[in-house]
Each structure stands twice: as structure tokens, then as C-alpha cells.
Length: 174
Image (cartoon, rainbow, N blue to C red; front, side, top):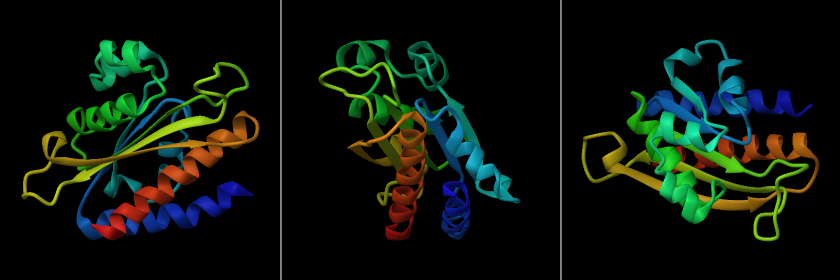
């Protein structure tokens, strides 16, 4: 079962965050809090998970994370620009040094020709190497778009797995 595979990944993520002395904030749309929930499955997660934002609606993205409504209007909620703004907003509205954000079309409805079902934008923000100050203004952000196949549950699970595996990769490179 996919959930069992995640526990080892969460443990590795926890170890990497603890190694750096950093806290994580999640900003989730299409996964609806699944990433934060999997993190809290691990005992002791309060040592490295600071908070999770579930910003499913455009209004929530604006109110909770400070995403500019004009950015959503111009690029759409499922875009690199909005994913990046969500990741940076999660840092600004938390005490975390690291964030991950996901926004996508899990389906079965909501897709378009430009953004078919299974389209997910990811963003990861980590402290930049430029200095000791942490926070959104000194964050390094990476975005990526992937297209997953399968039903709603498969798209959401693949999103969770990729978000966490890639964050682990970036933490290990840092």
C-alpha cells in the first residue's frame, strides 16, 4: 500500500529537516492537507513540521498565504506563479524555514485543454545560501509541473509522493 511506502520517506524527510534545524510548512490545494497529514503520522513530527495550510479556494490562497488575486487571474490557480507565491506565502505566514506547495487538477472534472486533469504545479522554498537570515525574502524557490495519469486518488497520491521526494532531494543537496 502506498501509505506504508510513505512512512520511510517521511522519516527521511524528518531526519533531513532535523539535521538542518529547520521547520517545514506545507501549502496544499489539490491534496487537501494529505501531505501534512502524512507528516503527522510520524511521532515527534512537531519537532520539524511547523504548520500546514489547506488553501483549496482562490480566496483561501489570498487570505491564508497572501497570493495576489491578480496573479491568479492572470495565470490561473494551477500555475508556476501561484505555486511559487503559495510556497513563499507559507514561509511569510509561519515560523518555518522550508515550505512546499502544490496546486493542481486532481479530477475527474476541472481540467481544460491547457491544464488537463492530472496537471500539478509544485514549488519548494528553502533558505538561500546568501546569508544567515531566514524567511520568505531570502528563500530559494524551485517550481516544477508534472502530469499524472489515473483517477483522483492516484493523482493526489502521486502529487504527495513527488512533493516529498523532491523536497528530500533538495534538503540533501543543501
